[in-house]
Image 1 (spheres, helix red, strand yellow):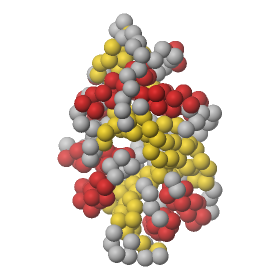
Image 2 (spheres, rainbow, N blue to C red):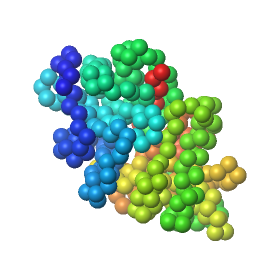
Image 3 (cartoon, rainbow, N blue to C red):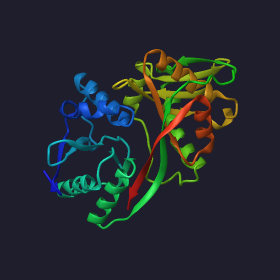
Image 4 (cartoon, one colour):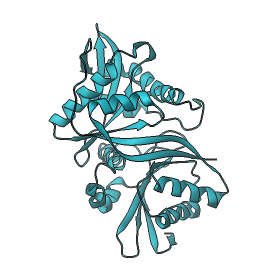
Length: 300
């Protein structure tokens, strides 16, 4: 356990143990903590189902102040290189304690995602300790749907993806990240690549968490979403292949998913790439409002 300026860092590879300690903290603001909550709940479900532990780094951390109160949390669960940390808001001193703990563990960290300014503080401190430099890969923004504004009608209809759609969905999940980087002017070949594993996508499809929009029996759009955690469900990814863009399918797909989630009693949120004006305009037109700015950093 690393101690810095009276902040203590407790780490665990057990998602259930993390939830036992941090549930109250996560529930206090389930919108801002949605990524940590959904990922952790899924890990608990997978463990209960007997799914083997992954071979990539996976852990959760709680940073407490001198009085034992939680000052912030972080996790490293991403299945894709460089397996970045995900950091929620915490004081600078708590961020320094987390970075020091990772240094003492001998853990190499090449990426940090999460809330600003905490993610920047953690990335900068890790870089300082290991002699590296920090580069901003992506600026993102968390939005919450306040009042759904139905979009204009478009041809086609929604349906949930099934097992026969697995290969198409894998291709589109991968293409989503490449196209998003290209649209934002980032290098597609850069190291900050986000992917979904085939096992994870099979789970999502079996749980009816991937919606396809079809026109004349042909899928033209994909909209994924997460199971609610503490009453909040996160939409994404949202992807329309290049040849089908400009027809309103993204607006229709997100609106349909949001309508279903709202009907189930969930709050609805999503993340956008701040460098993509098209997607930000679409979501605002549907009734999404900005909540907090976040960022993804690479440590080189």
